Length: 379
Ligand SMILES: *[C@@H]1O[C@H](CO)[C@@H](O)[C@H](O)[C@H]1NC(C)=O
Ligand SMILES: *[C@@H]1O[C@H](CO)[C@@H](O)[C@H](O)[C@H]1NC(C)=O
Image (cartoon, rainbow, N blue to C red):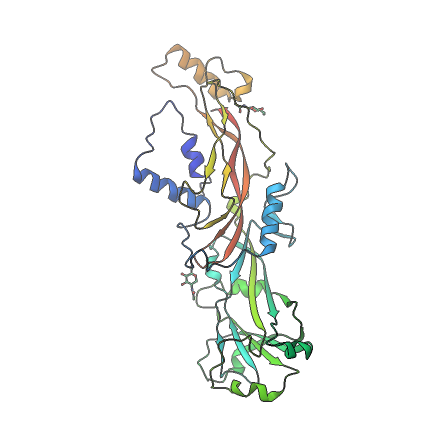
C-alpha cells in the first residue's frame, strides 16, 4: 500500500517543478488519496446530526489524550497498552439491535437483540480484541421505587447461530454465552465479556445474527410485568419497569500496513528563519479548512509541517543528502538546464492519533503513521 499521506505528498512536491493546486479534480484526487492512506474508502458521512451523535466514551478520550502526550520513543504506536493487545484502531461499535418480543422462552422476560455491524472493519484489519460491555442504568421511576431498594436482574446472553423467523422455535438457534444476576443501583452496573472470536466470525458476510439479551427482573411483583406477555409489544420506554440497557463493543484491530516506522513524535519546535535552504517549515492543518470538521472529533487540526527550500551545490551535511543527491547538485551546478536540483523532501515523519465518527456513527480512535514532518533532506 502506498503510505504517503496526500497532503504531505502535495506539500513535498519539489518546487523546481510546477504544481497547480487550484484544479478541483486535482483536489478531489488528493482528498481520495489522503483518505485511502487513512484507511478510509470514502469520506465518512455520519448519519446523525451533530447534536444527535453519540458522545465520545470517556475511555476513548482518555486514550486519545494519553497518545497526544506520549513523548518520543515511549511506546509502540501499534500496541494498545490499555488492553494489552496489538492494534492501531479502537472502535466503539454501536449496538443496532432492537427490543424484541415473542421469542422468549420465559414469559416474564424481556429480550433485547444486540447487533454490532462488524463490516465497518476493513478486510485488511486484524481483529485483536472485541470486548462487549453491557451497562444497566437504573433510573428509579419514583421516590418509593428508590426506597424499595436495589433490585436485581437475571441476565442471560445468547449468541444466535442461524437466522430465526419471528415466532419460530428460537431455542435451537441460540447458544448461551453467559448467565448471571446483576444488582441494580442508581450507579450503573455493568458486565464485560470477551467476544473476540465470535466478533471475528461476524465479519464474514451473512454470518452475523447478533446476540440476544434476556432480562428477568428478580425482585419485582410479577403483576407489574403483565403487559410484557409474549406477543404483546413492549412498552417503548424500557426505563418504566426495566433498567436502560446500553451495550457497546470495543473492537481493537491492527492495520498492518500502517505499522511500519516506530518513532514517536518528539515535541518538534521548528525554528523560524528566513533562509531559503531546504528545511522543515511550520504548517498547521485545520480540518475545518478541509471541510472535515463534521466527522473528525479530535484533534481539530495539527502541526503537519512541510519541506521546502533549495538543495544548492555544494550540498552541506546538514541537508541530509544522499550520495545521489550530492552528485545531482554537482551536475546541476555544471548545467542547470539539463538537470534539476534534488528535491527537498521529508526524511523523518511521526504519527498522530485521530478520533472520528464513521458512517455508522461509531466512535473510532486511530493511530496514524507519518503524519508530521520532523526532518527534511535533499533527495
Ligand atoms: C453494516 O455496515 C456496512 C458498512 O458501513 C453497510 O454497508 C451495511 O449496510 C451495514 N449493515 C447493516 C445490517 O446495518
Ligand atoms: C538533517 O537531520 C538532522 C538530524 O539527523 C536534523 O537536525 C536536521 O534538521 C536535518 N536537516 C533538515 C534540512 O531538516
